[in-house]
Each structure stands twice: as C-alpha cells, then as structure tokens.
Length: 113
Length: 111
Image 1 (tube, each protein chain N blue to C red):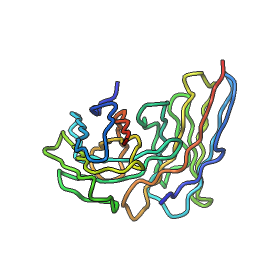
Image 2 (cartoon, rainbow over the protein chains, first blue to last red):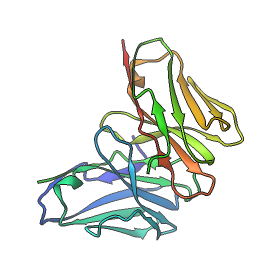
Image 3 (tube, rainbow over the protein chains, first blue to last red):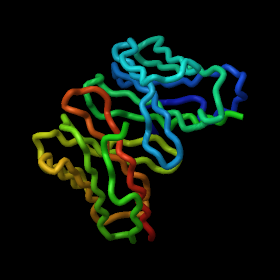
Image 4 (spheres, chains in turn yellow, green):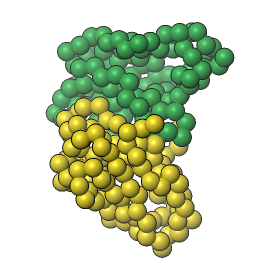
C-alpha cells in the first residue's frame, strides 16, 4: 500500500470533457508533485507545489491546471485534452522541496479518446 | 531534460544471481537517488546517496557513487522474482532545482 493515494485509478475521457485527478497524502509533507509518464519512459515533471504555492511549472499546456487546496491535497484539472496526453499521471510528495526522497502514488491511467 | 543515462537498458537474470546497473550523469550533483517501479505501480524510493558519500547499503542493495566519473551503480544481490521491475536513477543538481530521472533499466528475474 502506498502512502500517497490517487483517484481515480483509470480515466477515459473525450477531448471536450472536463475532469480532475486527485492526490492525497497524510505524511505532513510540504512539497507535492505532478508527473506524466509514458510507457517505458521515465516520469516527466509537470508541476511542483511547495508549502501550497506553485513553485515550478515545466511549461505545461494550460489545458492542465493544478490546484493545491491544502497541504494534504493536490488536484490536476483537465480540459480539452489531446490524444497525446494519454499517459500515467503520477503524484508524489516529499518533506520539502529540497531533494528529499519522493513518495509516489500508483497513478491515474488516463486515456483520451 | 534527462540528466542520467542508464546502462543497460534491459537486464535478464535468474533468481539468486546479482544484478548490476549503472547511471551516468552530466552536471555536479547534490545527491543521487534510486527508485524502483513495478509494472502498473508508482515509483518506490530505494536509496539516496549524497555527493560526499561513496557507498551505501540497504538490505540486498548496494549503491556506489563516483563523482569524478559522474557515475553511480546499483547492485542487487541474490535477486528474487519480486525484484522484476524498472529501476531509475535520479539526480538532484547541486544548484538544487528539480530531480532529474534517467531513462531506466528494465530488470527481469526468472525463477
């Protein structure tokens, strides 16, 4: 069992839909991350939140919108996605954004029709 | 962009054998981390080695770091079928910033 919980595990959506991915951790970590991972590739960083403030946006298209409502929750709002956005989306957390080990959830497998 | 390059890309061994994989990187680092990813799961942190350390052990895992060669190795001793996974190295530049993952090594351990 992972200490970072992601929901849903699978999501299929059309290109015009709006959906959200959710991530929750109760380890008291103050840094949270969104990664995108394609098959047989390493994870690619999308966003970093540090103390509930967005600290890194890796030039991600605006159709992905992150939100950190509180220190335990991280959301990724999706709108008008493209087929190439189909991937595994991983959430991670660490004590702080200072290079400590990251704890990953099991991800949301997203398919865009 | 990817900082670490891993070698080999894939490794197939039998249970009980040792598995060694290598990671090379380009810029000076603060620390280097190894992660494991089982199929369909998230990454699991295995071990972190700081730039002033040369070797670290954790159970059946041994990690070495050679900052002069900008390389690290992960040794898994007495491998088990449950070690079948992808292994990624990740480096934190000494200028801080983001953790940068290598391309990964796929390890298959057959009974």
